[in-house]
Length: 325
Image (cartoon, rainbow, N blue to C red; front, side, top):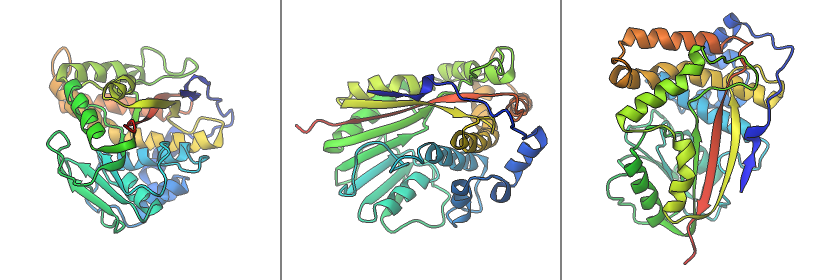
């Protein structure tokens, strides 16, 4: 089953007034300028470590976008029909731990584990939330099987073979009838009009980074491959939701406008980190210098903060369950 929001055109706000300067200022002053109360809450609630860098800021923004775009549902954190009776939930690639922390808040009787290869920069978490540093490609040592396993925005985390290993481990460590859910984004930027022309820096980003990722052996087309990979691992009853994540405050719809403003911050904070390793290691015709990467992403930022550019990226959310027998 597919919920195909991804085919609907996003209406443009004809009265959008955000200029390059004001949008840039919004992203310099997160706690005062960005309108989203959800986003402000994430960075004001004492969970952020003073040592955060731009990549963790980008993760915070991505978490907020996902919540804003699901804010009209009863549970904006996930779609799998997992109720409060779940005893154990695992968040793979937990990053800054915000999803795991929020789910632990929602289900105080559930043990929620977040795992990543880097320690998350958090200063507080609920008592039923456990954040761990581990490599999920190694043997899993958790004793209890999970009711639900969640993954999100993990482009380039694994090779194709390693992804198969991860999904198989998820299958083996879920209870019968348990659920897996994954949300991924496309690196390609699109527009429903001609505001992201093919010769723009923004339009080039997807193909440039896809090529680098291909040469690195860690492809970033997970959005397109995860459904078949999850089914190949043995899961069934697969459902998916395809949607558009706008970048900038240009949409007419209030919910999309809020999400777009936060998503611009995710891109602005994350671009250099996303591109630096790929382009300095696998850029063509030769590896790029750090200065070339900085100049490139600077041009993309300039294009994206133009209110006449109506860019978005596609997102796909997939959830499926393990058979009862």
